[in-house]
Length: 227
Ligand code: E4P
Image (cartoon, rainbow, N blue to C red; front, side, top):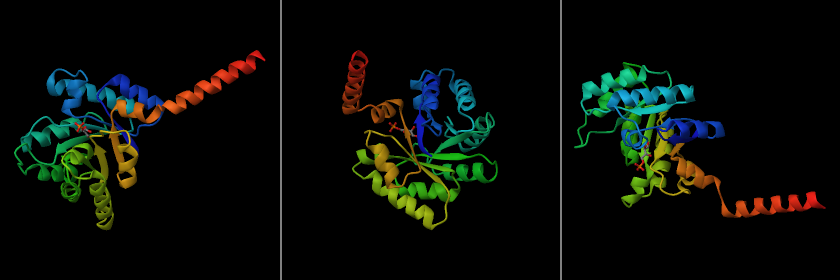
């Protein structure tokens, strides 16, 4: 699967879809706010429907806006019913470490047939619990892991090996890219998917020496035309 786009902007999704390089889109409330969504959950639903229709059958992650277990389940079901390709982000626990979310993940996947992206995780062991609960995707925030003094690559490699040893089918998504090189490094370490912002894709593509080489080709082609 390789690369998902971490964006809530229609124009950006359209652009990278045309490039053919993205295999899905991820959002969260922070991204949607930054990308101009207004009107609370209704606004998020509207933007999500637009993106989901544009990228179908590729997957779109949309996060619930509540921390109440009952509301998380009902909102997740409502969001998931908007389009077949929408999966629902549930944080691994609440802001104070409230532990209801794991049961929410399990209920959504096993009772309500809703695909879950368990998110805001900073360790392989959190991802393992989410995978055991049945999450389709487990999202580790690599840049934040590194910022805390750990090595995201170690967490990814150990997690991938454990998931395979245990026969767990969750797909590992790594978000929170901080450096262009993170993308290849984390995929090489064993992530199924790295979710990237448009800036990162731009940084992956353009290289100063490629620019210089292309300038040389074009200049020599022009000289050939003249001779
Ligand atoms: C991942 O799914 C998140 O949307 C995102 O990558 C988090 O990145 P940040 O640490 O830059 O907020």
